[in-house]
Structures are given as structure tokens and as C-alpha cells.
Amino acid sequence: MIPSPERLPAPAGFLDRIASWALPPLGSLGSRPTLVAPLAIVLGVALATAAGTQAWGWTLAAGPAGPPPEAVRAWVWVIAASSPLIALVKGGLLALVAWALLVLFGAPSNFRPVLSALLYGEAILSLQGPALLLTLLLQGGVRRGGVPVPTGLDLLVDPAHAVLFALARGVTPFHLVWVGFLGLALAASAKAPRARGFAVSAALWTLVVGLAALRAVLTQGAA
Image (cartoon, rainbow, N blue to C red; front, side, top):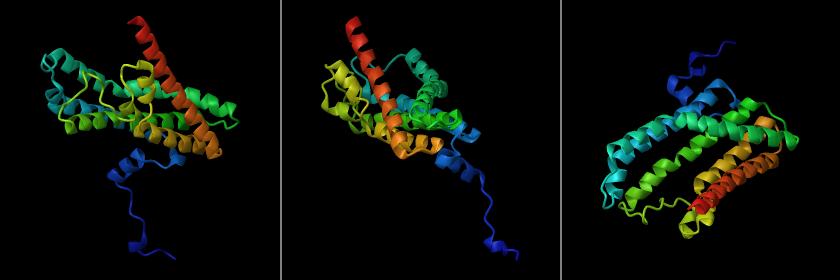
């Protein structure tokens, strides 16, 4: 029996495909669109943040020296334009670590889904940029002597304690979502229990935060 025309599923439109790539089912990670889409999200967020910073952020945060020079403004656009490459390098390195950990935990997976998951993780963390700008706007441009606007546990830590402050900046709502998403995505890519996926994502978070603390120690020692 041929189904009536009104019962036939509507073909997926362009916007539907874009939405499915931006928020893909975990089982589809590793396909070409899921490798490109997160980098496009990172680029879009970075450009929007740069535009917002140029329009509002520096005007509100300008200190006695006034807004930054044009060279600094141009450099912000260069960094924003190169954000997909930065995300690809960082996501790729973390994907190698995650893939190796999955193998060690007895849950081997193909590398492409793992890379796709880590790239979407970079897209999640990129949302911190607009959040920082919005926080700055809501605060009326008040900044604590040039200290970055807090987005998480760093709100409770004195910036003078560089190492603790670096650790605290790794505990934000964005990092919690990052750990949760990666736990589910890595478990799905390896067809393993979620506990193993969350173990790997927690290990990745520990690595990232540990490197930030190490950089704070080295910077403090150099100063």
C-alpha cells in the first residue's frame, strides 16, 4: 500500500541539516559534517565576540589610558579568524589523549568520532567569550584592576593566588557541560559504559586544568 502524500516525511531542508549538524545525535559523530560544523561554530562565536568587544567591551572597560590602539583591535580580529585552527589543534591533541585513554580503559574507538566529540567540546568552551562580554556589560565595565571577569569558581578565589585562581577558572558551568557532553559522546563512540566515558572526560578536564596551573606556576616563577 502506497502511503498518502500527506503522510510522507517532508524532505530535510537546508536549515534542518544545519541544525542536525550543530546538534548532532551522538551516534553520528565522526561524519564529515560533524567535523566541520563545530569549527564553524567556533569561528562564528569568535567573530561575534570580537565584534561585540569592539563595539561595547572596550568602551566600557577603558581605563585611564583609554581604548586600545588600532593595532590591538586588528590583532583581535586576527585571533578570531584563526580560532578554528586553534580549536582544531587543541581538540586534535585532546582527542589523541582521549583515544589512548579509551584504549587503556578497554573501550577502543575509531579516532574520527573522538575527534568530532572534542571539536564540539571546543565549541562549547568557545561560548565563554560571549558570556564574558555579557558579564562585562551587566557590570557596567567595572573590572578588578584588569583581572579577567569571573565565570565560575574563580569568583571566590583571590587572583593574587595565581595557582588556585588558575585551577578555579577551570570550574565553570561551561566546563561542567564540557565534561558531561564528552562523557556521553565518548561512551557512545566506543559503545562502552557511560562510566568509562565520564572517566575519560574527567581525566581530560584534569589534564587541561593541570596545565593551566602549571603555566601559572611557571609565570609566577618567571616574575
